[in-house]
Image 1 (cartoon, rainbow, N blue to C red):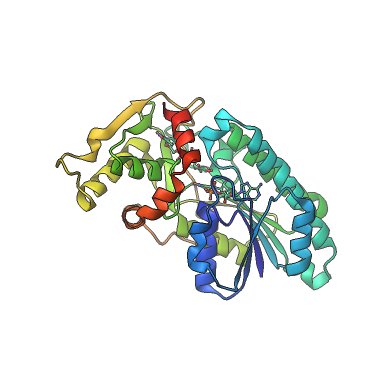
Image 2: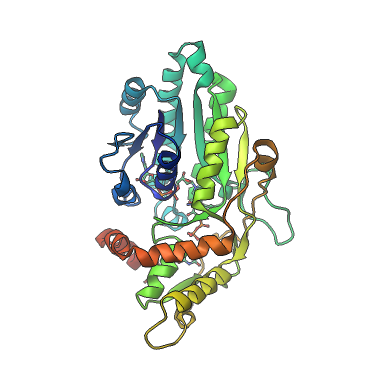
Length: 351
Ligand code: NAD
Ligand code: DAU
């Protein structure tokens, strides 16, 4: 079996659902259930003995040690993190605790467990760390996309904390020989995306008749990947990645934010037209920019394609349509995640 951390969040849940749709290898899912963790993402696995959910913190070394000893997973896939840049600007503390200290404690527990395995167990074991393209900083308009050799230049407390975790993972391989793999992925989108992030926020605000808050001039560029393609990349790296190596994951889909928002408006105009016959574009509002806002991210994913034969299955056009359709088909999921805590966040960030 494998141990997944953060498997009740957006990408982790999509990964767990896809994993169990494709194989019968069980998953132990360790998640703290912060505001971003949601067991409704995993509702379809209720009663499925292949999925063991444990509520807990990756920073709880004793708990992680117990889970490793009990279940003896052949791999740990670490998704658990605080993941929202705007929240890291309001309050970096949780990011330091989970992304840096939490990853350190997880690595320590895994190192002790790995050290106790026999030779064959050690050779088969993997620790896969899921990270982000934001560790590379911001690109100028004509600069080539980030390769795995790009220097680390994180600009937000979030990306700095992820960069620190990447360095720890690297050091545990170099110093202790821990069999690690790291993936650095671009912006994901798809089902179960928490509506504090650009794409789901715009969809839920549009449908609620609220403003669509575009930061600054809306010309910041992100490189978008459908979440199930990220899950397939992680499966591929876990199966065939070279120990100690880093793999960039991306969809070759660079788009300015304003284009994303207009695409969403056009899809909603088609699939759920406004009652007054006007376009959702009428709701677009330019607001104050994010402090230290990175201008452009772009991922060069050729290493993963060349060495491991991975390619995304979804185009941006097909993926974004599926995503809008998913939000239209799941109003209860949306209603449930818009709890009091979510309303407090929206008030703090956008008022
Ligand atoms: P998310 O915020 O939706 O989910 C994070 C999950 O981790 C939640 O279920 C939360 O409860 C859990 N968690 C938080 N702190 C924890 C702790 N201390 N112990 C155990 N569980 C904890 O995040 P996401 O968007 O699914 O991102 C998952 C991972 O992928 C993160 O490491 C993130 O840095 C990385 N990543 C995200 C993107 C993206 O576009 N969302 C892109 C590249 C990489
Ligand atoms: O690049 C990978 C990263 O992508 C991940 O590591 C992060 O976990 C993930 O949250 C995401 O970070 P971003 O900051 O790029 O994503 P976010 O959805 O917050 O913002 C995307 C862009 O949209 C960014 O340029 C800011 C802008 N934006 C965002 C929000 C929430 C707006 O213009 N208005 C908004 O209300």
